[in-house]
Length: 141
Image (cartoon, rainbow, N blue to C red; front, side):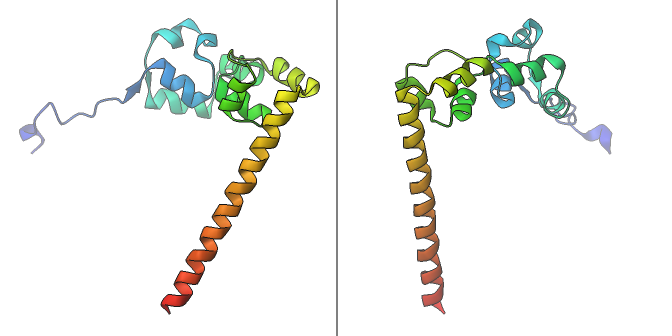
């Protein structure tokens, strides 16, 4: 029976991604990764292995950086747009991020306050939507 299957569809192709995509999924700055990572392709299996058992270079990058903008923004408690408004366009190391937190320049304090307001508003909207849904469900009975 297997002999009648089309050989082109009988095997599964390995799903691969560009190094930039893999670096983004791993939360690391591509330019700081080893050359062999940057120059190759990464299969889904390899990505899963990197996530479950990170090699030393990946552990070091995650701990010390340089970190990509989404990670820098998260560590500072602000948005990526807030980073740009603060003039931070380059990747930062963990040490640089900690120094910024210690200095707490005015722009960072403002962006953290803005982010806190956004989070509060998001919670308020979700609560309001939940209440509306509960009322609607109650009225249907």
